[in-house]
Length: 75
Image (cartoon, rainbow, N blue to C red; front, side):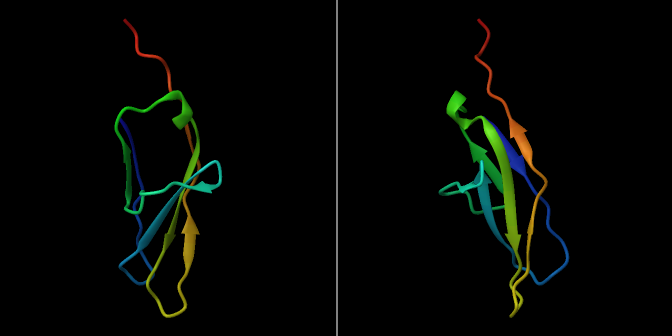
């Protein structure tokens, strides 16, 4: 299981979340928690989340980068 989360405050809620892996959008990941069962080696990479508020002039902020490494299960 691969799980990451972000916490947003400030701006005008509700917030929109867009997760990216190596700079490319990740389909289906649109909440504050990224979750993927059965992580595989292809899931390794650098992840960020772009959070956008709901103001009339929406503002966005990008999370710090999280590097994910996937290792083979022991046994």
